[in-house]
Amino acid sequence: MPKQDIAVVVLAAGKGTRMKSKLHKVLHAIGGQPMLHHLLASVESLSPAKTVIVVGAEREQVEAAVADCEIVTQSEQLGTGHAVMMTSEALETYSGDVLVLYGDVPFIPTSLMRDMIAAKAETENTGLVVLGFRPYDPAKYGRLVTAADGSLERIVEYKDASEAERAITLCNSGMMLIEGDKLFTWLDRLSNKNAAGEYYLTDLVEVARKDGRTVAVVEAREEDVMGINSREDLANAEAAFQTRKRRAAMAAGVTLIDPATVYFSHDTKLGSDITIEPSVFFGPGVTIEDGATIKAYSHLEGVRVRAGAAIGPFARLRPGADIGEGAKIGNFVEVKKAKLEAGVKVSHLSYIGDAYIGADANIGAGTITCNYDGFLKFETHIGAGAFIGSNSALVAPVKIGDGALVAAGSVITEDVSADALAVARGRQAEKQGFAKEFREQQASKKAAQAAKKGK
Image (tube, rainbow, N blue to C red; front, side, top):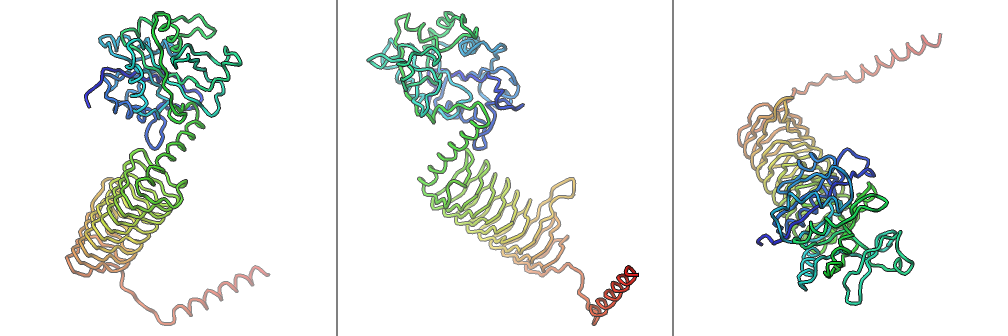
């Protein structure tokens, strides 16, 4: 889609003091992704000509977290109108319309932005489009007072509203689309003669109407304009995000045994006919193919689980794990940066890291690939059809050939040939009667000690 004649200004200059964090408010994560990135992803789908982010404190944090956006600074916090004024140089050569959004309102969908653009295009006289919503609890939101034709007459702050105006359920979200040719002319006419000494963007409604321009209103759902100002708000946003992801997964053919206990990331990719049991967590970068089963209490991040594989319960798959078709990763197994081909079984109590395992190999309980010498990582290569006995340690770099057998309890430090048996453990020895003699001796010593204490 070609870029549209529209610029987006994202206001992110608030100090976010209620978050009580050294991290910039808009960089706190929802679904494993900063809230600002959720918004920018929707903005990118709009294909704007330019995106400008207005920041205050912690500018360097935002600059490090975003690309393809211009950053400007609002050194003094003098209101939302003043924040948009700070973009004058960045938008100096731009004359298209300007969409003003908020960095701490991450869930506004692209479709709603398009609705605002369409509303402005309905008549040539429309100079401004304000985004409204009807909250479950209007609380102290500003009210949108509309005319009979649906156009906006004025925005009334709650503290200034009459009882009749407070009864209005249509509230102000703060976001708006502004005619680019008029933006800075209208901003220059804003006044800061108010109790806070600030320039309010909402005052543009009055300015535009004085110029004889119509102000349109587009309505959003409350969840689309959810703002985040505190850790509690962040938790509520995470809950709303997870609810949407769970519903989308089930609608796409995924079975969630207990949806409320499954947590997705922003980029989780799921095929169809997948079953996900309770208490499963997906970190960023997870792809699950058709027909796979993710059993209870498993944690996955940065992995690919191919068709028909079974994971868990109590499995941990870390970044770089690639689990082949029909493979089985059992309980208390950890896999990191390892490619497992089709049909591999790692059924329980094992660690597989920096490894390649060929098709249909079987890894016994308690097997460890010893991949780190304290300084560097090394690879373990296990051939197709190999069988690794329980409680084996494979000291990398090492290669186990196709079809080879490694005896239980072995410590393998050298390559094993294909179809060979490798045994690397101490030889078992037996001393007849030793256990009985040992018990008698120890019992005698214990009795002597007790008698001594009794004196």
